[in-house]
Length: 297
Image (cartoon, rainbow, N blue to C red; front, side, top):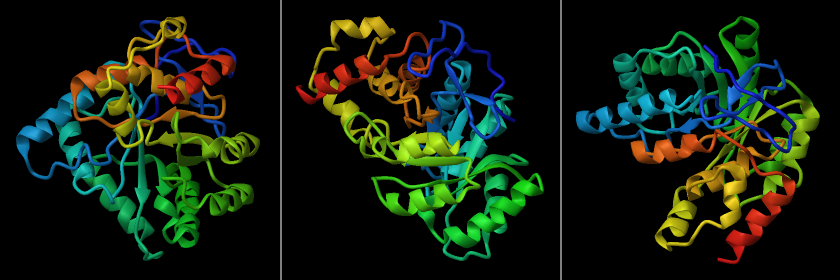
């Protein structure tokens, strides 16, 4: 697996794609490139056994890959999301572009391998690209097991995750200790705490960064859309057509961020999300302008 998608990457502060080629960034640990827009499954793919809803999520998956998607992130914490992913892959096949990311989420530190194997079965895949310790639950024994699994070729990358700005001090200590390929943290236009210490440290330590909650659980993009706030005219300068693109391009244009994982239940929203991974990206000065514009709405 891994992202076999062509793209053109230029300077850290301004990255360009084309209408047909998604923007990618390199994973520091290996140099392998992945598209900057991935997909999350929290809440959105937790639809149980409802076949109509499973089929609808399969259409979302289909469009994700048609538009150049790569990373999909899930967790045992997300209810039926893993099983619903497996349902979709059974119908669509497993694309070569898939970069599979999941998590270990159990307080039993001896169950790392068991949970990874169960998640592989639910997805219908043989090996995960990335396995993360979810919210640092029992992180010490899980990381030890995951590092051994990486040495054995059972997983390709190892990471840790958190959300809502929690446990950043613990994150820093683990990152500095070494051995981490990825971190996953909350980062969006209105929640930028990680800019101060976590993101610069990730770059210093050669760690890839996944941004979760890019729309603040949906509330941020809903506020902007429902409020009928206009996009600024200068959004055209970085090929931005809608608020989803505006919010996502802000995130993935940060030089320390590798990819963002927005979640959605709708094909139309998926098309908007994937549009953020193409064309020109805002530079540092424009990012500051984006912050000011939204804060003043």
